[in-house]
Image (cartoon, rainbow, N blue to C red; front, side):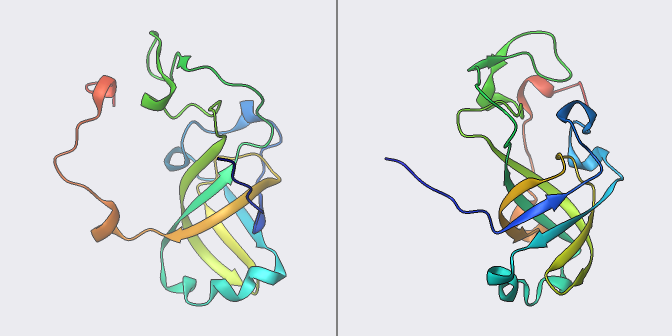
Length: 145
Protein backbone atom coordinates (compact mmCIF):
# COMPACT_ATOMS: atom_id res chain seq x y z
CA UNK A 1 0.00 0.00 0.00
CA UNK A 2 1.28 3.45 -0.89
CA UNK A 3 -0.02 6.84 0.18
CA UNK A 4 0.52 10.24 -1.34
CA UNK A 5 0.06 13.46 0.60
CA UNK A 6 -0.26 16.97 -0.73
CA UNK A 7 0.90 19.78 1.58
CA UNK A 8 -1.80 22.23 2.70
CA UNK A 9 0.71 24.95 3.46
CA UNK A 10 4.23 25.90 4.45
CA UNK A 11 5.69 26.51 7.92
CA UNK A 12 8.02 29.51 8.16
CA UNK A 13 10.49 29.63 11.07
CA UNK A 14 13.79 31.33 11.93
CA UNK A 15 15.63 27.99 11.64
CA UNK A 16 17.55 27.31 8.43
CA UNK A 17 19.12 23.97 9.47
CA UNK A 18 17.90 21.06 11.58
CA UNK A 19 20.88 21.52 13.90
CA UNK A 20 19.44 24.91 14.94
CA UNK A 21 16.01 23.63 16.00
CA UNK A 22 14.99 22.95 19.60
CA UNK A 23 14.56 19.31 20.56
CA UNK A 24 10.79 19.74 21.15
CA UNK A 25 8.25 22.49 20.47
CA UNK A 26 7.59 22.98 24.18
CA UNK A 27 11.22 24.06 24.60
CA UNK A 28 10.92 26.75 21.91
CA UNK A 29 9.89 30.34 22.47
CA UNK A 30 10.37 31.23 18.79
CA UNK A 31 7.58 32.70 16.70
CA UNK A 32 6.78 31.34 13.26
CA UNK A 33 4.01 31.62 10.75
CA UNK A 34 2.07 29.06 8.83
CA UNK A 35 0.97 29.98 5.34
CA UNK A 36 -2.04 27.91 4.35
CA UNK A 37 -2.48 27.60 0.60
CA UNK A 38 -5.51 29.55 -0.63
CA UNK A 39 -7.36 26.42 -1.74
CA UNK A 40 -7.40 25.25 1.92
CA UNK A 41 -7.89 28.63 3.67
CA UNK A 42 -11.63 28.07 4.23
CA UNK A 43 -10.67 25.12 6.45
CA UNK A 44 -9.27 27.58 9.01
CA UNK A 45 -12.71 28.91 9.95
CA UNK A 46 -13.13 28.66 13.73
CA UNK A 47 -9.46 27.98 14.51
CA UNK A 48 -9.04 31.34 16.28
CA UNK A 49 -10.88 29.99 19.33
CA UNK A 50 -8.11 27.52 20.14
CA UNK A 51 -5.02 28.46 22.12
CA UNK A 52 -2.94 25.53 20.81
CA UNK A 53 -2.88 23.49 17.63
CA UNK A 54 -1.15 20.30 16.54
CA UNK A 55 0.85 20.44 13.33
CA UNK A 56 1.54 17.37 11.21
CA UNK A 57 4.36 17.99 8.77
CA UNK A 58 7.11 16.35 6.72
CA UNK A 59 10.78 16.20 7.71
CA UNK A 60 11.49 17.17 4.11
CA UNK A 61 15.26 17.58 4.48
CA UNK A 62 15.79 14.17 6.11
CA UNK A 63 17.04 11.22 4.14
CA UNK A 64 17.27 7.67 5.40
CA UNK A 65 16.48 6.29 8.79
CA UNK A 66 17.58 3.71 11.31
CA UNK A 67 15.35 1.45 13.37
CA UNK A 68 17.74 1.90 16.32
CA UNK A 69 18.79 5.36 17.49
CA UNK A 70 20.49 6.99 20.46
CA UNK A 71 17.86 9.50 21.61
CA UNK A 72 18.15 12.85 23.31
CA UNK A 73 18.49 12.37 27.11
CA UNK A 74 20.01 8.88 26.80
CA UNK A 75 23.21 7.23 25.61
CA UNK A 76 21.86 3.77 24.79
CA UNK A 77 20.17 2.67 21.59
CA UNK A 78 16.39 2.49 21.52
CA UNK A 79 13.95 1.54 18.81
CA UNK A 80 13.06 4.58 16.71
CA UNK A 81 9.37 4.12 17.57
CA UNK A 82 10.22 4.50 21.28
CA UNK A 83 11.72 7.93 20.52
CA UNK A 84 10.87 11.19 18.84
CA UNK A 85 13.87 11.06 16.52
CA UNK A 86 13.20 12.80 13.18
CA UNK A 87 14.87 10.16 10.97
CA UNK A 88 11.95 7.73 10.64
CA UNK A 89 10.61 5.31 8.00
CA UNK A 90 7.77 7.78 7.29
CA UNK A 91 9.23 11.19 7.93
CA UNK A 92 6.19 12.71 9.60
CA UNK A 93 6.58 15.23 12.40
CA UNK A 94 4.12 16.32 15.07
CA UNK A 95 4.37 19.50 17.14
CA UNK A 96 1.98 21.27 19.48
CA UNK A 97 2.30 25.05 19.13
CA UNK A 98 0.55 28.03 20.65
CA UNK A 99 -1.74 29.84 18.23
CA UNK A 100 -1.16 33.57 18.61
CA UNK A 101 -3.38 34.77 15.79
CA UNK A 102 -4.77 34.48 12.31
CA UNK A 103 -4.74 36.94 9.47
CA UNK A 104 -6.51 35.49 6.45
CA UNK A 105 -4.65 32.33 5.43
CA UNK A 106 -1.66 32.95 7.74
CA UNK A 107 -1.40 31.69 11.32
CA UNK A 108 1.13 33.12 13.76
CA UNK A 109 2.36 30.51 16.23
CA UNK A 110 4.80 30.24 19.13
CA UNK A 111 6.92 27.20 19.87
CA UNK A 112 8.19 26.27 16.42
CA UNK A 113 10.76 23.47 16.29
CA UNK A 114 10.97 22.78 12.56
CA UNK A 115 13.10 24.29 9.80
CA UNK A 116 11.93 27.11 7.57
CA UNK A 117 9.96 25.93 4.56
CA UNK A 118 8.63 22.75 6.16
CA UNK A 119 5.63 21.35 4.24
CA UNK A 120 2.49 21.21 6.40
CA UNK A 121 0.24 18.16 6.01
CA UNK A 122 -2.53 18.91 8.52
CA UNK A 123 -3.65 20.96 11.52
CA UNK A 124 -5.73 19.71 14.42
CA UNK A 125 -6.88 21.67 17.46
CA UNK A 126 -5.30 20.69 20.77
CA UNK A 127 -8.16 19.79 23.11
CA UNK A 128 -7.05 18.86 26.66
CA UNK A 129 -10.10 16.67 27.50
CA UNK A 130 -9.28 14.60 24.40
CA UNK A 131 -5.49 14.86 24.34
CA UNK A 132 -4.28 14.89 27.96
CA UNK A 133 -4.02 11.46 29.57
CA UNK A 134 -3.72 10.59 33.24
CA UNK A 135 -1.65 7.82 34.78
CA UNK A 136 0.83 7.65 31.91
CA UNK A 137 4.14 5.77 31.78
CA UNK A 138 7.10 7.32 29.98
CA UNK A 139 9.27 4.25 29.51
CA UNK A 140 13.03 4.79 29.37
CA UNK A 141 12.52 8.53 30.08
CA UNK A 142 11.32 7.81 33.64
CA UNK A 143 13.48 9.86 36.02
CA UNK A 144 15.16 11.81 33.20
CA UNK A 145 12.62 14.64 32.88
